[in-house]
Structures are given as structure tokens and as C-alpha cells.
Image 1 (tube, one colour):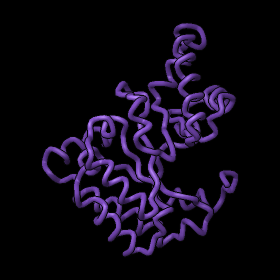
Image 2: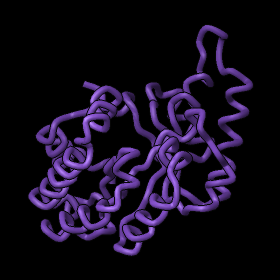
Image 3: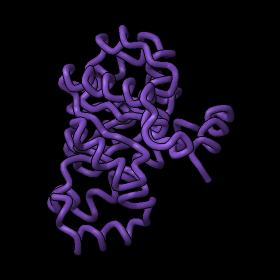
Length: 216
């Protein structure tokens, strides 16, 4: 089941904080048990829902779990959707400040999904911005025989802007070698998508770490 389906239900039923706690606990437990940092993994990303972001208990909840598993806070990167950032008020920035003071870093997820507010990007420092596939896929519209010039112009200028802001960029939804090569040539060196792998189990991930060192 896609997170787009069950997260709104959990939020509506008032279960999202409990669900988020379970997920974060499992992530930290896995990281500690398998010594991911010692395997060369620099950080691990964990998504936060919009309601989690503005809950006053969020910083203490995450801090307790980090301490429980003796995880270095710098190993945790928290993903906040662009929509949550635009729609949230002071509580989001207060929570981000507390978590950043602990040592956690932040990513803006789904950048380019129609809620972009560039003026507000200057208010909060993000360590990483994830370009949504909706910005990328139109550039490879096969029905129009090659790249869409308007979509390409938008994407390339967004990339230039983000590079000027000195943030890391991850391109989502990369499904072909053509996409990967093009984005690399634009200066985006962190890519994710089915071209590399579909979601895999813990066991498959550990096998990958044990057998494929090309990611390092």
C-alpha cells in the first residue's frame, strides 16, 4: 500500500504520531543492529508527515529513540514535504530548530509539486532538496518526440537556483539511463528511482551492501 493512501488515514484517525514513533524506532533499531554507519552509510532518511512536523512532542519523541539506540543524530536526515513546509507555521520552524540543535539534518521532499514558495525557502536552511518526478518526467515526453523544451527550461533553471543556494540535490523518479545521464550533466549527482532499484526488503538491502561496493 502506498504511503499516499495510509498516511492521510492515520492522520485523520489521530494515529500518525504513534505510527511515526513505530517507524522511527524500527529505522534506528535496524541501523544499530546492522551497524549501517560502519558499512559506509553516511546518513539515513526518515519521512515526517505534516502533522508530525508541527506536533510539540516531536523533538522529545525522536530524541528519546535516538538515545535508546545510541544513534548519532547526524546520521538522521528528516524529510519534510514541500506542502507541509508551506502550510505550517511557527511550530514547524521551532521543531526544526530543536532537532537541528540535536544534530539532525533536513531535506525538502517533493520539491516542485505545485506548492513552491521560493521566498519562504530563505527562512529555513535545508541540507538537501529532492526534486519531484513531476519536474523531471515532462522533460522526457516521448509523445512529443524527445525533450519538452518548456519543461526542460524550468527544470534546468530550478537546478541552477538550488546549486546557487549550496544545497544538495536528489532527483526522484529516475527510470532510464537517458534521465540519469541528463541529470548528471545538469549537475545533479544524487539520483533515485526504478532505474537503480525498486523498494527492497531489509535482507535484500543488506545483501546489496555486502556484495556491491560501487555506491561508496
